[in-house]
Length: 296
Image (cartoon, rainbow, N blue to C red; front, side):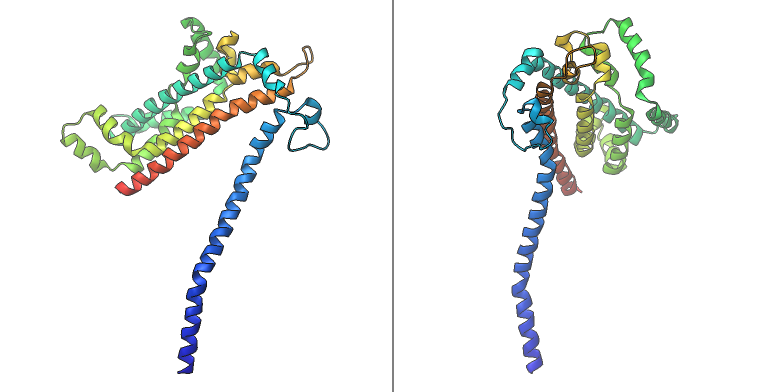
């Protein structure tokens, strides 16, 4: 009798302690996540702080988190030296066009490779994958000669056209399409009289939204940060992208010294669109996963 009463008392104690333990565990997990988040945000904070510092503060042996004197002149000098608003617009336009083109061509080819059986499909896919092993530098000279023949130098076509197809994008979306879309769904759409493009637009695209989001993020960031190819095909200052324009602030042994303040200010402004795009696409990425799980 006494033993059963003691066991019931201990059980009640554990039940009372359960919510308290869960609350403590939740607070501990939240605190750790907040600490990790602050660690990831610190480089962005320090970059913003450095963009408002004098050159002497940047290279001091005792760096400070906040500038001693808020030097907004760095941003004014950036826009005085460069047409940086136009350069940011060029980067945004070219990265958006290239991303949309790659999403369209990659998803279309991925659907064909994943759900259609045509002669030489597997061999053609192997050849496509083999192109991933070719360094980008090998194709620069032939591509540049093609742009010269077409008369596309100093035009947006020269930047966007070579990047409208991505072997990696086709591979990524093909694997995702195979896993996310059952063959029975395609057969049902065919029996209802739907053609290739109707199945592609009404059935395939809604199911591969998470894969499209991942590929879009990677493509946009890669195009935004691209330096070598825009440098070769865009000579006029008003046509240059943000990375190419910022390189003009870097001094050489024969030219003036590097303008570190405006350079960091420009880097800060050039980073903000990437952060905004990532946060926006992350929301769609999570919602895409959830919708796919609910449809399951």
